[in-house]
Image (cartoon, rainbow, N blue to C red; front, side):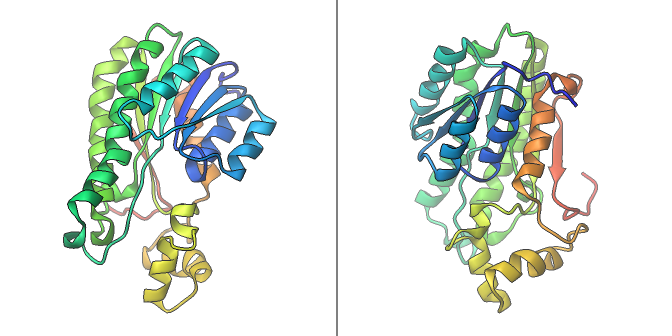
Length: 265
């Protein structure tokens, strides 16, 4: 299916790895001009830059002026913004929800929620008046499935999901659709890095990180598919929602969790 994204201007936050990098790759493959904001230029992002028309801006988007810097780079390169994908988010585990410090709460909310608030505010002038425009926010199944050891992350994602609904109500009449994608466990560095969640959880389950990701995690969470998602699966959903093919979809929250969540919203 042609998503009609050729020559569209796309901005992605947190695009150096995981879901963000996969989304940048998917949209670039559709012919979009992609601008990625990230603190670091990873090897994966370097490979993408060599293959497609992608611009990487090395910036700290948690700084108040970081979002405007990224938006200006996209405007300078492409003349405006058609698609904004707010993917940036961070999480830090703790033994329980009561053991997070104020600084940790603030740091996680700054990256996971307030960066999106600032990105939307900065990007709106460059998105208004386009043929069609779209915002996709990457939330999490944890917005509905709170876990004590990542309580600030779950709370920030719940707020982000709520924000998406409010933005859709306000911006869709202005020609800017807003949707949310809420992944469950995805095989990304958040889980698989040497000090990631898989390492911590594998110790509790008495197994290896690889076995935890492949077997113990899907089993313990009763995931119907029997496996965690891959980044490209989330990216393909984001690409569809960002495109004009989803022109009648706005204010929606798409859960892609392998059947983890069993309740009806």
